[in-house]
Image (tube, rainbow, N blue to C red; front, side):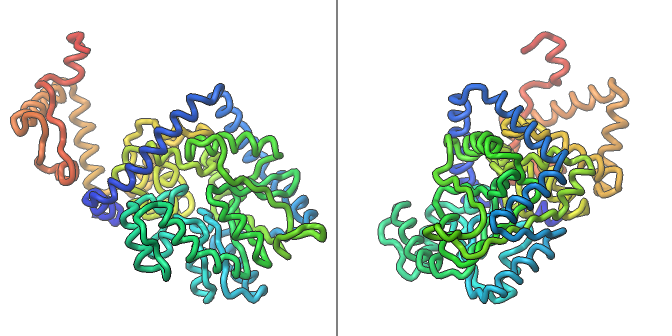
Length: 464
């Protein structure tokens, strides 16, 4: 088996993982449905959001220049990074110039994408993750498993045990509030003492040079206001033309991600501390990262650059909810990750598997707040993998055999009928094992056919 199928196999066998993922994803699905039902003209808002992002992507060069000009006028220094290595070098050099011994980092998937945590460790700079979920996985020495809830693969019982083992002054009561207070005691002094604060950006506003961050804990503000230097790392697709456009997207982002009308902390930054400001960093640097985005724009994946990182596609994905995020083996899991990862890392024997972790049921596109055609883009990767000969020989032979059989309808119908008959004899309601199909039945039962007749036969007889 490939590394991907090994990870999937391990995830399917982990009962605690299924409990943890279903707790969070199930709650998110229900809350989103309630929020969208209460949002009149959601479909119209969704179409406008897609149009905003498409406009920026089409005129990306114009808005990048405008943002740099206005951010510079506000006192920030803008840096450009072609790829992950260059982005990390810029950040590490800035930290070293500031004499930083520690940095307070607010949750950023772009930071994970470019490998910033590893770069900081190699440079001997202490990293303090200020987001509660990021703090949890930092203690556990694990990567994020979701782009909104990085620790969703952990149950609260596992988090409690982790805090008791790693916090100097852990909680006594087994409550979520007590565990949060334990993290607060552990993190607060470190956050306030950090030399540099590092954040991502939810949106970059071109006509003002502002950076927008969105959190539910206020950790971005504590990460970026007390330190002497504030560094923003952001993908170039985060641009929006103006504040009204950002506000429109924020209304969709919060509802799609957590089911809330608006996140608790939505903050806009423009440059470092000014003479009349009560607080803020002495210097602000913005690192704009390409890392394959212009290649996506010109190679048929421009629609993926609409993504506002809400995580809705994961929360509703039947595959993700069975295996969790780590099974994907990449920074971005779920449907959006299965599209983005081959674009960033290249399509190869490892990343080709991701496009197959999909039933193509279309739910991901249905809930996407910017209407990204994820199933279509995933099919595109499958077709490219086939054309480039990356599919295993067994798969190519199997599909070839099926194609020849399907080319003879009479024989095909007889084969389906025989298969139904055999499967009904193996099990009455559920099948615990099927010859040559252990991948289906190793971790779950398979429903037995309801009758010997195929769907086409039953449909022809008028059965509904």
